[in-house]
Image 1 (spheres, rainbow, N blue to C red):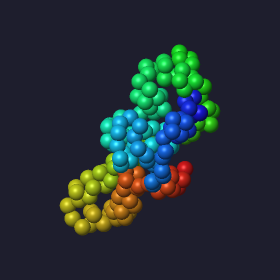
Image 2 (tube, helix red, strand yellow):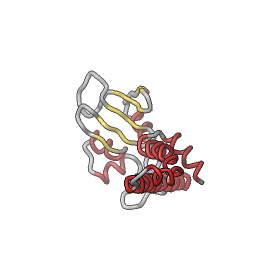
Image 3 (cartoon, rainbow, N blue to C red):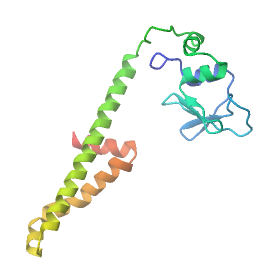
Image 4 (cartoon, rainbow, N blue to C red):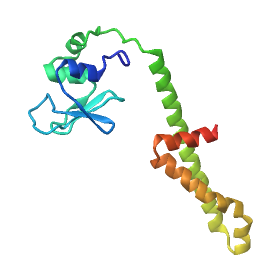
Length: 170
């Protein structure tokens, strides 16, 4: 159980849906409509599905509702969950979610600060009227490429690159 919900992949397997790994996602034939080419994608980490053929998507509860034409409460019962009671939250998952939220907040703050600093440097340099004034700001000029790299990593980099930047800043 994740977040008190049954695992989506296990539920799909119990429903007889075969999935094959392709990259970081699982793919199979969509059980919600007839098709010959797999368009049903499952993200195991996010515990979400999306069919690119019929457009349906969601979590394990949404899947059971759509597959068996059930309302929300009946889907919860089908999955062995109790309607009206909040699902118990795994402390490890809660901590992981908190750490990810903290990291994402750090990433946004760092990105905004880097962009502001980059703009400040350019604003100062544009105000310089001659080379003597520009040379006085040489240390700032040398920081431009580092700041550009940080902005690129924070906006388009993968998690490993972002974490490396994070670990250097703490």
